[in-house]
Length: 207
Image (cartoon, rainbow, N blue to C red; front, side, top):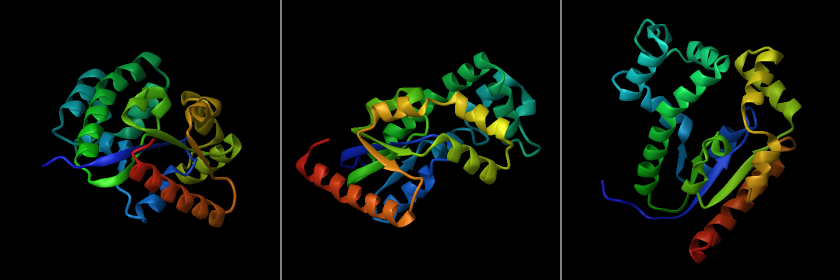
């Protein structure tokens, strides 16, 4: 496929339960191309993909379900209690995610795109984007949302938060911040304003 033209790439990030999916959907409703690295990661571990074979070789066949697909719950539990294992998993996935994201962005043709990278700080993928947009929410609200969404207890939810970059580290990298603890109407207006702002930046060739 021929290459496209993207003037501006905005990296969207935020902690678990911050509302990244809802925010990216709102940008998509304006016709903004959205590439989500979580989706890319799922593509990369489909049956037959080299990354899945490497994961099985590293962590064992019990990481697969009966259909031969990756059992994410089993793998997640394993790497959360094994720091070295988590690093090995990241070594398998992150270079592939980075490479695939670059290919997908290069194929787009739009004034700007949204590249959703939940672990933007942790993976050091800031070089893939021109601006960083952080969806921010208080930690206590993150915990409540994750517990309600994923059926986790508070201990599990806080363990996930502890494994991610701190709120302060994310905010330190932010060019723009969307506070997502309040009124949805205000959030929608802020997204609409940012959309117009990014279009202006893209038109001027600025980041």
